[in-house]
Image (cartoon, rainbow, N blue to C red; front, side):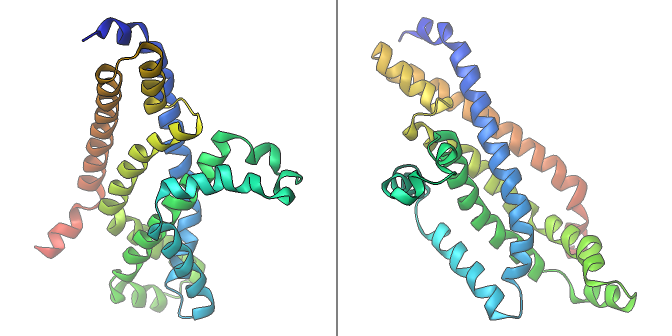
Length: 230
């Protein structure tokens, strides 16, 4: 055991943890904005609207995130049209490719989570909103979205934690997030246990913070659902 090396590289782990949090927050934030309208489209009575969303979520939930990341990071470079496009300066960046892969993947899961939350909204709430004369946009803003988020919160909390841990895949395309730092230290100092044990401890702490935060939010916003069931 050589923990002195870990102590010497705590600054690198701090930078890696920052990148881990950046990837998690950015991916979840962007995907949230996309998933909300997609959840409504997923429940649309029109198959022309519903089916493309279903195909998208099926593809990205049915294939490994690592494969999706490799297809975006390595695969897009195979096309000359992509390399010569104005998007290439961004698509050649590992950070941008990782964000694209993470956003597409977590949006697929989040869309299905939110769509399920919409399907569990009591019909009485919808009918009351219509009887009150609310427009579709007002119903969505005041009834559907708050109710959807409340009912989806436990599952969305799990997706948040899964996304945090999935950021470790960013190390496969040269990004030095938490796992990437551990891998770099392993290759530099030829030690295996200490770097990855430290990375695991960092993920455990971050996960504990997220779990605690979602538990507090659930007690504040979801408690009334348990009272209703009781």
